[in-house]
Length: 235
Image 1 (cartoon, rainbow, N blue to C red):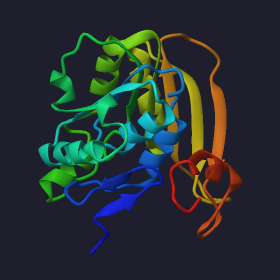
Image 2 (image 1 turned 90 degrees about the vertical axis):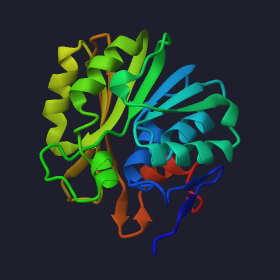
Image 3 (image 1 turned 120 degrees about the horizontal axis):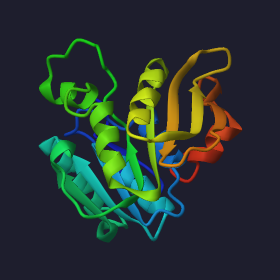
Image 4 (image 1 turned 45 degrees about the horizontal axis):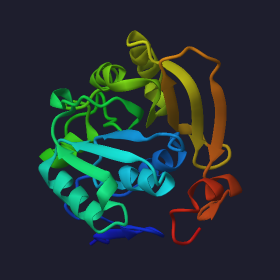
């Protein structure tokens, strides 16, 4: 049986009630997103609350709203937030992002969205909802984000490399423009598997970056250590 929790340096994530467990994708997005000057942050599809908690650790001024459609995941996120040092700055809302209503405008919107666009649905309904784009697709994500973003705000997401063109084209439809891109490689010589992308409402030259996670198995690169060392216990 897998461990029911994952211990970080400043908080603990319990994930035994969530379909999707703590993984590298969420940690990458939480560590990479432009959180430094963001006072209002929205985390779409928060799951366990991992990214919301990472952003709260990184920015002590931020107020964070985290939306999650799955009731069990939202309840677990509430527990994780309540046990953290930042419970007064993170609000968990159990709702479909399509129906989420607010008068706030956000400096940063983050999402680790479902990624199996064309894959067959798996039998586990909760895991299926977490992994597929039936309830939160890129069209919905960018349409709503464009409405909720402040003028200088950013939308930061992590996606599989194979859907990169689809994602960029969809964002462009809603006047969200590529401003920063990080291509992630697991090891030297391996193909890019994940891409972190930041969009803004202003057209500007995109900052291009790359990151390799490991030199070899369990031997992490200095760049990956620098990005994640404030969170992982053993970095």
